[in-house]
Image (cartoon, rainbow, N blue to C red; front, side):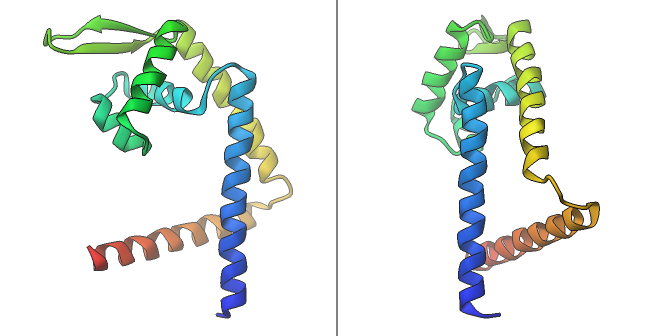
Length: 148
C-alpha cells in the first residue's frame, strides 16, 4: 500500500465526513433545530429516557455544559418536558408529541439526504463499502486495545 494512496484515502474520508455533517446540519437548521439538540431528541425518542447529563455528554462526545444548553432550548421549544423523577433529587425528561413529530420529520429528511449521497451505488458497491468500514473499525479497535 503506497503512502500516497493511504493519504488520499484518509483525506477523502475526512472530507466526506465533513460534507455529510454539513449536509445534516443544514437540514436540521432549515427545520429550526441545532444538531446537538437533534441528537438529544433522537436518543430520547429511541431510549424513552435520557441517562444522566454527564452520561449523555459522554455518549454524544460533547461537554456537559453543551448538554445543559441544548436541553434548556428543546424544553423551551416544547420538544421535551421535565417532570419530577421517582427520586425527588432528579428530574426526568420526556419527549413530547411535538418532539416525536420533529424526530419523525428529520428521519425522513436525513434518509432523503443519505440516499442521495449513495446515488448511483449498486448493492454490491454498498456492501463492499460497508465491509471496508467494518474492517477499518476492527483495525482501529485492535490498535486501541493494544495501546490501552
